[in-house]
Length: 281
Length: 197
Image (cartoon, rainbow over all chains, first blue to last red):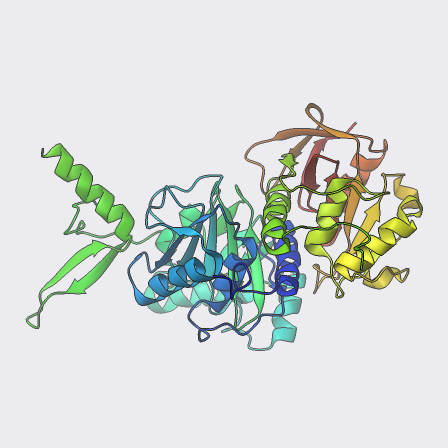
């Protein structure tokens, strides 16, 4: 422990990130450039999220890290270990217990509270990037609220597929001003991002951007009057806990076409299983 | 060698606790956050201002001091603990420290950001006497569930109308951190002042 500064980053780096975080909170949905540092993990493994977490972490925090909803995947386990080693903080797999939840591409099924902070790992923060590759242009498009291109993209989805086929990284409008990429979370989670009691922070390490949603921010998924926004629905319920209405992962069980659906949120699933077990006595 | 003025005793830990208070204040406008860090008094500034300076400023963030704060003790404190350049070139000021809100007319023309970079703006850190939750103005906007009543004793009469104008320029504008010896609060540019008096 003594060989690391608290939460790994040096104090000047933290000051720089903290200044960016305050601007991000003050301008919800706007991507604040920051001087992202090299981290002891490759880009794509959550270097942005880790830098945000390191800058907000206090010794009393309890950290939970999830990767696609799961606490026990390599990325989640190694980030938890990283902060255990460099900040000597407590970690947890329980959503209710955590004060900070760092996430890769899911919002927990358990409703979040005002005293929690959700930190997203973001690969491409710019929602317009695949439509307009030039940063100079997308920056102007945000400045002038020129978001017609995004609606054209969604319209082309409808003209080709009969419905909006975007299922993840589904663009949202923040407080009627900035179009924002909620990171590649499934669109299933978009309603949970709206009016969320917890502070939501987004860190993109390679792209060097930080953005934020303060608690209770109005976040609407872009849609059309005749093609309203809809979340995914499943015929199946979770094979392990039996719950329906959660985000389900498809798991291949053999090489003969066997498959089951299970909750992507492992903590929520485990809780449902133990509740059922107790009910059954 | 004698350390001229005290800063944090344990900067990595105390700055993290201090920043969480500032982050909470900025993301929940109208809430009052206690200062949970033990700070030795510095002549000329209150502890909330001291906390904000220690947590947020460094050699990359030029700061501006109003006339009352332009004291040797404050300048030395900022230089020794933060390496923050005290500047009179308004265009690059990241943090402006005010001993009190004088009035909108006497506020120097600090940067408000630009349409493409609204983050390149000044944050005002203003000392007040105390906070009140019962009377004052009604706040709403991001970070506020429905509405929040808030007031600070010691703000000049035209502060709230200035805040309304500040919000009307959104996404441009200045963010405000209000400080006392015991507590801090913040008003980001996104906050809406429903009823100003």
